[in-house]
Amino acid sequence: MTPTLAPVLPAPAVASDVRLVTVDMDGTLLDDAHELPRALWPLLAELERRGVLFCPASGRQYANLAARFGDAGARLLYIAENGSYVVRDGVEVSSDTLDRGVVHEIVAEVRALTASGADVGVVVCGKRSAYVERTDDRFRAEADRYYALLAVVDDLLAVDDEVLKVAVFDFGSAARTTAPALARFAEAHQVVVSGEHWVDVMNPGTHKGAAVRRVQEAFGITPAQTMAFGDYLNDLEMLDAAELSFAMANAHPDVVARARYVAPANAENGVVRTVAALLGIELDGVDPV
Image 1: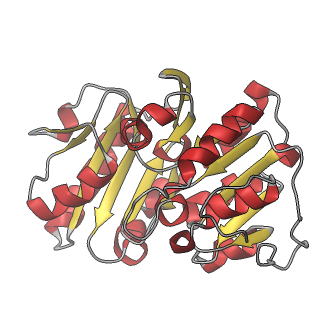
Image 2 (image 1 turned 135 degrees about the horizontal axis):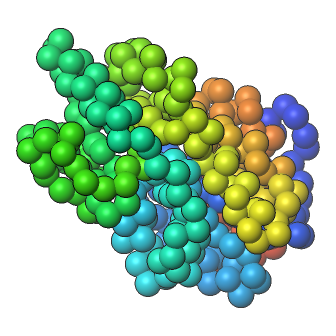
């Protein structure tokens, strides 16, 4: 069975000239327990043998992504921090850092939101580490999930690092509480609801799609040679950069509307099954789509 059809084009039976596969992590490649599928490892080996770049593209920190993939991911291309940091083989390909004054304004706004009673916490995401000043176990459990390098500081305004992104975790609804509070920054910056509980603030024009296009330019890859998978609003521009764009079956409705095709849900190993099917790769124990 071919991937479920989103209403734009019939899903292809095969894709013979794919050179780049770019995938979101949470809600897309990871299952509902936030684990990588076991069948990913032989798929990565075969993609490397064929010269196809595999690129995790996430709001997660680069150190977090590299740790998740371990030795098997040493040669992968990573789009981290929602497109503001691109790394391959441990070497920076591109980055887009925030002005220090803007970082201070965002932190001050989140502090005011907290003072008003909102249950939120802020992460300042630098190149060397991520930084927090909220230290309770509930918040740290959420932050630790996405940031392998996370330093506790007394004052986020004193952080001395190149800042890629400011992320805010909202224990309620990020779309209803935090995003409106940060709306004024959207006039000159990218304010993205990247999950049910996360809002990210980055430079204007910084998103996964811009990062994918930089990768395409650097490696001579076209949108027609690019396959992309996503599930949430911070994946929209990434899907626009690929002609083989897939929303997961569990995706936000706006993502389904934007993608050309729909893949099986993350809980059904949708990414691995779809890539294997379209590229004609047989994997033991993996049901075709």
